[in-house]
Structures are given as structure tokens and as C-alpha cells.
Length: 432
Image (cartoon, rainbow, N blue to C red; front, side, top):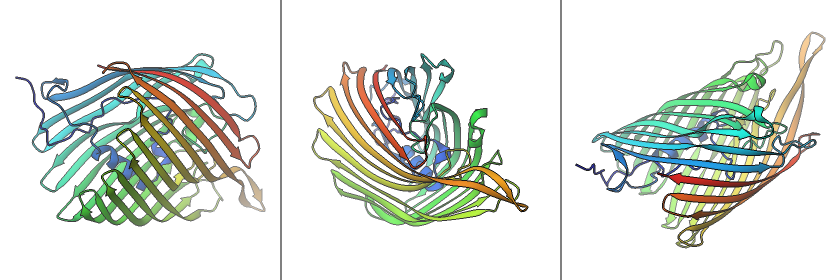
């Protein structure tokens, strides 16, 4: 008997995980604070990608998606260097796998992941395995108006093109794993969410200052004005411990308000903001602790202009953990705009513009001042301008080709940390 999925329960699996150098923004747990990490997890768990059809591939009661990808990229400045820029050709290939098993009437087990290999033709020492950022295994238990989801997200990345705060680095191998639980309760017009997660982040010996573990907490309560419109308050907290003494352990707290507003069927607005407080506990003898009073803001507009044209505008101001040795934190403002045009049923065009403006303190070293250890600290102010153009062509229902171009320009008040980079990528995706 052919398995027939329940049509009233949309799947969270994506048709295919597309790995592309054209869209380098990825989830890396080390750089996320507790609030934005929790929101990212909720979006990944709660955003359905398609409704299973009777002809969806399956193994008994288990629905699945299987795909393969391969891309070839030329990058004229792989190490983001102001001088002595090195170019290379990169080959990335791998598979994508999605599984969903509706174990019982009130529980689902889902897996969404991708594995690949990244090869540098000139600088082969940069080559290595990759695990799709955000690869997730989740198990959800649901009741009439409540649910509890246990999840595990893992990633292993090598490139640092998504890190606006980093320069003069070609690869920065990072393994991240986040395990946690998310609880949701929607009695009547009220809505409540709470989550806890434990994360570990590991890198190689050259970047061991990134090795840390985090405990993250999040909660929010709101009022639903309509099915897709709600507003309320949210709070988060985190505890971070580093393995090396050059980085400061820290704790953080934030509290603010949020709004999710479905203005029309074609226009959605999301906004949130509030104060954030960080306390840094130095692991270096004689170095005083420090604190940071700041704030976070997030604003986004999603607009479906026509059946074929859509646009997205977002503005995010956040505080992240330091991405460089001797840096405790990064304060960054990111503005992004993207436009997507379905030219025909099989041809799609897209473009995006991004701007990052950040500030990060560096501790270059320490010196003894009459028995007191004093840090030699500077502050970097940087800006990163980037843009992408891409065109995709759906040859068949299973095969898609994408061609894209990307440009980045980084400015900095510190000598040797500005650069310009261009890349061209051709990619094939096949869904079995």
C-alpha cells in the first residue's frame, strides 16, 4: 500500500539544500548571541518548505529528499588581503539529504543535512570536508495548543567569507554543534516560547582562540492579533567559556519588544529591539574585567510585488562574540536588500546588496606598568560593501544550473585590513 502523508501537517524539509558561494551568509554559532540564535532555530523549525504530495518519494512511512550539487568558483582574493592577494579556483561537491518520519499522530522526526568536499586547486592545504551550516535533526511532540521540540544543529565550515569582521584569512575551520529544546504554547490569543541550548565551537590549532562552549536561554510572550500577526516582549541570556586565556569568558542579558505583522497577504514586517548588557571576565592575570552596555535592533520587510517579483529589505544591529584573537566582541550594523525575479517558469534572476558597519576592540599584547598588567588595545572600525548577481535555469524538474558574480570591498581604519575581492561561480544542482 502506498504511503499517503497527512496533508494537514506541512513538512519542514526543504526540497534541496543549495550550497553556493553566491550566498555566503551562514549560521556559525560562535558569532550569534542568544536571542538571534534562538530566533534562527525557531524559524528553521517552524517554517514549512512544502506540503507533502502523495507522490513524494518515501521509504515506507519515511518521506525523503535526496540531491547532489557541484560548483566551480574563481576567486581573485581568497585570503581577503590588502596586499599580496592570492587567486584560486575552488571546486565544491556533495549531497543533500532530507528525511521526515511522522512517528505518531503527535510526533515527527526530521533530518535536514548536507555533506561535501571543498577543494582548492592551488592552495590545496585549504581543502577539506564541509557539513552544511544549520544541518539539523529535530524531534517534535505536539498537543492541541502546545509543542516541545528537541533538536541538534551541526556544521563544519572552512571559508570565512561571511565574516565581515575578519581580514587576511583564507580559511578558518570551524565545527559547531548546538543541542537544545524549544517549547511553544498558544492558548487562545496568547503565545509563549521558551528555549535552552548548549553549543560547542571548535577550530584548528591556528585558531584555537575560537574554541568555546555556550549556554543560551530565550523566552518571549506575546498577543496574537491575527494568525500571522503578533506583538510582545522577549528576553535572552547566555554564558560563554573559552578554552584559551586570550579570550574573556562572558555573560550576556537582553530584553526587548518584538512585532510580527502580516500587513497584507503580500507584505510582511518584522521588528524587534532592546538593550543588551555584556560582562567580560578576563582569564589573563592582572587584567581587569570589563562590561558593555549596548542594544540590538532588527527590522525586515518582505514584499511580494507580483506573482513573479519579490523583494526583501533588512536592517540588523547586533553584538556578537569576537571573531579575532584578542577581541571580546563585535558591534555590527548590517543592511541588506535583495530582489528576485521569476523571468519565466524555468529562468530566475536575483540580485542583492549588503552593507556592514562594525566596531571591534583588539588586544595586541600586554605590558607591565609598575606591577600592573595593562593591555595594549586598539579599536577597529570597518565597513564591508558587497553585491551579488545570479541567474538560474531549471533545465528539467530535477536539474538546475546557476551562474553568479560577487564583489566585496572592505575598508578599515587599521593598516593592512582593507581588501577587494571578486568571484564568479557556476553551479549544478540535481534532485533525485
